[in-house]
Image (cartoon, rainbow, N blue to C red):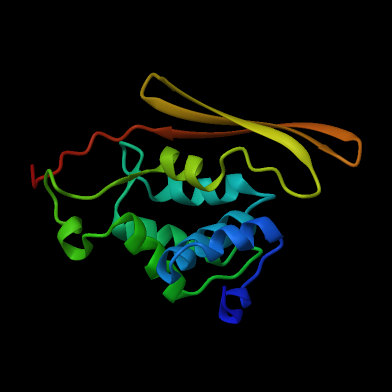
Length: 178
C-alpha cells in the first residue's frame, strides 16, 4: 500500500477494508472507492438516491449510459460525501465499458437495471448510528407501478417505522428504431 491510497478515506473505512483494498490494482481500487463514497454519501437517505435514478429510468426500469450519468450528477448535489465529474465518468465507464458503441439502440445497447444498482450500492447497508432494515416492494395495478419502501429503524433506543410510496403511470412508448 502507498500513502497516495490513503488520501480519500471515508467514515466507513476500517483497517480491514483499507488492507483489503491494498490488494487491488490502482484502477479497481479507484472504482471501488468511488462507489463506496456514493454509498456512504446516501447511507442515511438511500431513498433519495434511488428516487433520482427512478426519475431517469425507462419504462422497463433501466438506465442507459446517459441517464446513469445524469442520475449520478443530480445525486452528487445531495450527497453527504462529494464526488466530482471525473469520478462520475469513471463510475459510468465501469457499468458501460463499451462507450459510445454501447449507447447505440438495438440488441447490443448497454442497460443497467435500477434494482440491480440499488442492490450493488445498498446491500442491507446500516449506518454507524442506527440499526435498521429497508424493504422494497413493487406492485403493478391498472397500469400504475407503485414502489413501496418500508424502513424500520432504531436510533438510540427509539424505534421508528416509515413507509414511502412512489407511483408512476406506465407509459406506452413505441421506439421508432425497432
